[in-house]
Image 1 (cartoon, rainbow over the protein chains, first blue to last red):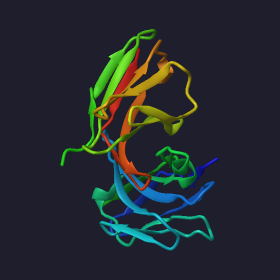
Image 2: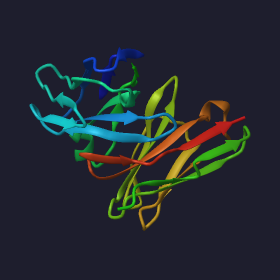
Image 3: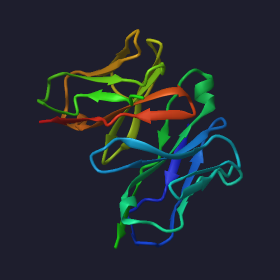
Image 4: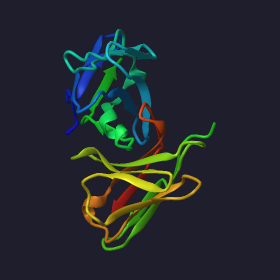
Length: 117
Length: 111
């Protein structure tokens, strides 16, 4: 079955540090890949996505590249801010499932990021 | 453009009771999927509805059920509540497999 493995935190960084959160996946078909962010007490917000191999998703200084050869979708940001403190989830949507007629996401466990001034 | 609306935001129920949660998707989105989020198990898929039909279901007991109405609004029901059902329940609205917009969730506490 489908699965997503991401580095577990918590991760604590100083402001302006470089961020990498690793994410690897296993999927039956050709998945679309996502990063979602969750702030305390809130739902999930889409941070970025990539729908095919070698696509790069980017948003608010965050980037991730869909690497089919390594089945990875690592999240990076060059300079984190205190406001980036949140939980980050890597997720996939597998076309093998959507081809069978179901839209659903498979999530990693989440990585809690804390950025200190 | 209105987002995904989940009601209520918070619920406290007693063991053995049942509960119904509601999700109104983005206008034009016909797919609604539901997820349970707990500290121990993370985010787990419950079920997905499309045009009033359940297309897929996750690995949850039959106490968890749902439905979708002709206006695409969806409800999920949990009967005979257990302490372990305490969780944040999230729904997502989709046009395709490439886009999922989440609501703010319903926080269910079972006492």
